[in-house]
Length: 472
Image 1 (cartoon, rainbow, N blue to C red):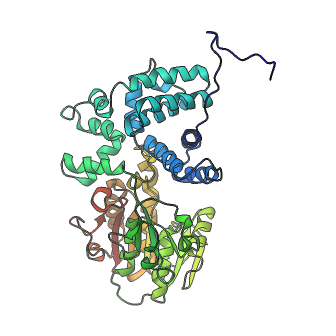
Image 2 (image 1 turned 135 degrees about the vertical axis):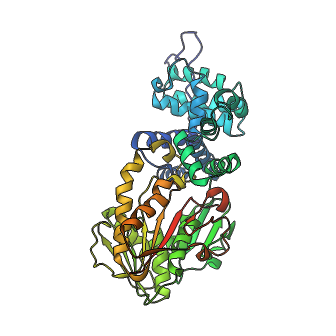
């Protein structure tokens, strides 16, 4: 027996070491990476989970809870900040970021999950003791006990302004989106309150994992043999995993014969591949190919027709990802590192061209919830010259009679129709092609000729597509 005296608190009670909860510690580490390094949760979380699974005490249920804590906290960050702000004795900006991350994790457990109140508070305070220390854990305990006094609906009645007084601010707090994003989405969507509420709600839902079977290498039927796999809604190559799961555990994904790809992205590639052409159909170009998902599908579709794909990407490391995605493609292809606004090919060289331009990513907020808090309205000004330059180059790169697909994962009008309209004013002898018939069976595509997909209407990312034919 040890002769060392037991450590005691000033009150005389024995000191109890905090309990280390691996699930909540992992969730906290992921949130810190997102905050400190501007990392994306969908890139940070998988390696943390793989490392944790190597330990015998971390099972599939633990992984599911950690995933929910991270993504749920990030999606509802704006709402939780409004709640926590009423429960602290200082401006929220004066709360240390690690403390605020712990408070947000606790708020999500209290307001966004079915975890019992006592367990949510207790587990979060124990986490605070481990990662913050006993002193700040007391602050966390006091704040969370105030948060626990109301459920989510009760808090929203207190912290959200009435809809009739300020519709956009009301929706921003209730649905946890920055006000400017609410305004931009509403402008693009049009209509009244019901539609925008459905869209914002869909942005906060966890999306299913969607796979793509790359033609000539895998089939949707093969992927449907996996557990909890069902056909995609719109793409003939899509398969959805209804219960999540680890795509890397699927042989076809490991081998590169299939990949993870949102159905909206698949539809963009399919529409370009099926657009009617005048003349030959031998050379295709993906002018912004990184990280390679659309290039891999385009390459497979091109191979079926005996066409060749050139995949161009400016960033060397992303060009490497494109090469990896295309490895094993059944037909000829080439991957180059080149600036899409300074082409390494002759004008008029291609029959079909895809330019999926860099953007704010507001169409993928389901998958990257932290993006809504990082983007600012002035980011649009930074992307605008690049988007227009890439589309101009794409139109110069296609031959007369060929087709260009302008795509972006954003529904913001400044990144979609405004770009297309501005460039077509500058580039003569071009016509918009009606893209709607090239997405057969997909409803609610609007008046055309361009297409905007929506999470709440189509179950996809909010992909935008305009097809443009070079006429002279």
